[in-house]
Amino acid sequence: MEKDIKILAIETSCDETAAAVVLNGREVLSNVISSQIKLHTIYGGVVPELASRKHTENINPVIRQALSEAGMTLSDVDAIAVTYGPGLVGALLVGVSEAKAIAWAAHKPIIGVHHIEGHISANFIENKDLEPPFLCLVVSGGHSHLVKVVGYGEFEILGRTRDDAAGEAFDKVARAIGLGYPGGPKIDAVSKTGNADAIEFPRAKVAGAEYDFSFSGLKSAVLNYLNSCEMKGEKIVTEDVAASFQKAVVDVLVEHSVHAIRETGFKKFALAGGVASNSALRTAMEEACKKEGVAFYRPSPILCTDNAAMIGAAAYYEFIKGNVSGYDLNAVPALKLGER
Ligand code: KG4
Ligand code: ZN
Image 1 (tube, rainbow, N blue to C red):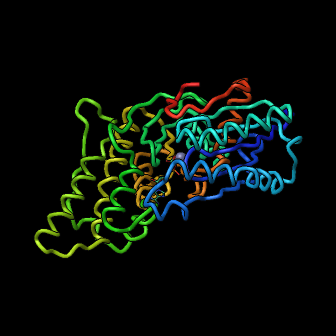
Image 2 (image 1 turned 30 degrees about the horizontal axis):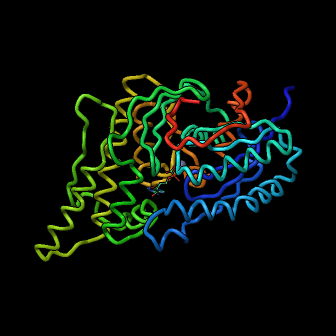
């Protein structure tokens, strides 16, 4: 039998300070997330400088807790993994510097992990049978990608957003309708009591790029609708605006995904990223996959939004391929998917 591999993973790319211990890429021994939502709520969004400072305060206690919940010390782990991009540079640097310091002190190898590869790998944790190849729709606050996962850590990007990411659109529209930060979960919640067919918002297509997304026109359409209601003195029903906007996003995401399923012939489809916890998207995509005769995977909501367990899952497959980083690993804020 092969030796068990235990990885201590660290994630600080945005506003969650997270650490986890993952066994053989699939079993989560601990998953600690210290959210900064309260801190940033008063500003209506993530303030990068504050995020970095909070990571610095939180990182050591979060790592200590992750090791203790897993019942081990640093000397018991086989490697240290850390998100090194993409993300906020100051936030990434806290995790990368910490990972390098403890890896060097404990004589452990270090594995730099791409944040989106982490989101995709979250699917391996609860679906022990899931193996590439599969199609994956990655929708988060900073990214919207439709990806062919051709192997572990091997990707072919079919489509991406031309402007706002899906989560960014949720956050901006939530602010405009007075729901505040973080927008996605709030729109998801109020949409449950709204009429999704009340307002016909546009479903944007990108000419010549069948799999690409564009959400900035939809965001402008919502803002125009709100302005015109105000000018005409018409009442704005927040729940209806939220539900109609959410439906417009979900329709486009599902339509592109179904198109990719039909064109590629892939038999497995997975959701990933913060927006993958959206209840309307999960239901619609599950139904679409059933109709297409394709297996549907999605992580539990706690593994959709930023966490370190997903980084530990991705790191395992890089580690067994021999893809370890040097102690000179640096943060790469605009790291592209598939680059190392
Ligand atoms: O993956 P994530 O935690 O961070 C990034 O890598 O960006 O994603 C955060 C994004 C935010 O834009 C947030 O509003 C969105 O995911 N989000 C949701 C939901 N939960 C989080 N969007 C729609 N519905 C949700 N339930
Ligand atoms: Zn993320």
